[in-house]
Image (tube, rainbow, N blue to C red; front, top):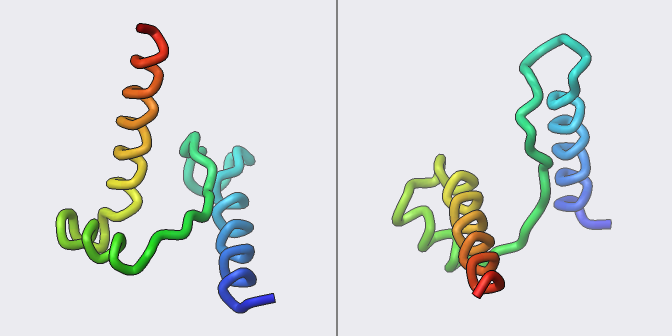
Length: 76
């Protein structure tokens, strides 16, 4: 097992617990943590456009746009 896999599993557990609805802590975000693999070049290109603190937001918005585009295509 690679160290990255262990770290990803630990982060997933932390995020999953933090997103619970037990009345403590922050309210649920309605999102599920997931891991994607992007090339370093792709990450650098995204960060050049939006900065390194907006990477996740950029990816969420890009995925939503692509889903809407494909769903609109299916309606035709």
